Amino acid sequence: MEFFVSLLDILLFPDPQLRKVAAPVNTVDGRVAALADDMLETMYNAPGIGLAATQINVHERLVVIDVSEENDQPLVLINPVLVHSEGEAEMQEGCLSIPEIYETIKRPSHVTVEAVDREGSPFKLDADGLLAVCLQHEIDHLDGKLFVDYLSPLKRNRIRKKMIKAARELEDND
Ligand code: ZN
Image (tube, rainbow, N blue to C red; front, side):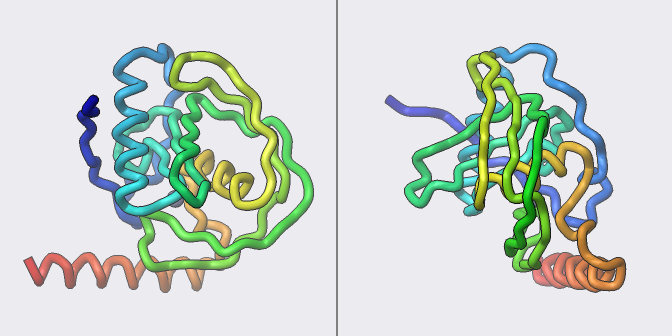
């Protein structure tokens, strides 16, 4: 059996579209399931461990995650809500919208998230470690927030300039 999926373009920081707040998904139907499949394929191809719809310029509350080594544990979270968080941990984060930039970010270490899966069934997820960080990072995207927002304005501005310069060099090479 063959699946037809398409790879989607990922917006790059500082694209202002990344700052939009996503709207809730009203109905989980075939369109949303197909979008989730395309997002997973795009994420695996990048490669990355998480992707929010905001990053592909779709402003709906949908994220996909897979933190497994084998890329065989895809998670689809529709309308995810962070209902509980506790503890504190520092981890190095990166983002498909901010390639080649990695910074240590402090966040709660344990989270509970409620969401709906690609079949439309509600579920609850308790997470720690990398998955907890990834969940928070992706839900932030839906609210127009990026991991560089946790850095000092000076550091963030340096990254912004680096990204703009890299984009310009890419254009010149075309
Ligand atoms: Zn990201």
